[in-house]
Image (cartoon, rainbow, N blue to C red):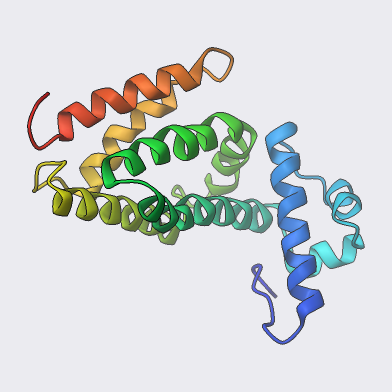
Length: 191
């Protein structure tokens, strides 16, 4: 049985896999539900293809979660190339991390259900997020914009405040305010 892995030899298999994940991510964001029939229709594949890639709804939900985390993590190098390190952190927190949290509420609910039997999220996704935070911290320490000694775990815990944002309110403004508060706490020299 597969858990969502894709043979690197078949381009059509990889395309189907990605279309299924994209359709499932959209479904989870919009409805919070996983209907293999609806996902197959949206992905333009047969329902059997969905089951071959993801034998259970839980496997599909976890794969969508990993994909979404991968998108958040993969943007970090591009942000550091495009912006100074201090600006890159703010853009990542407000435009990527907070946006993800506000638009993926259905995924969060489904993920809680999918992981209830195991009691925890996939460790590789958490490690990837810690790696992204570590990269941001290292760039900022090197630039002299944050104080050394901050750990990625501590900073991730501080980002937990984003979970309190109201998706029906002005969460972008609130995320920017929270990013400012966190930044002042991390800054090399208080401003």
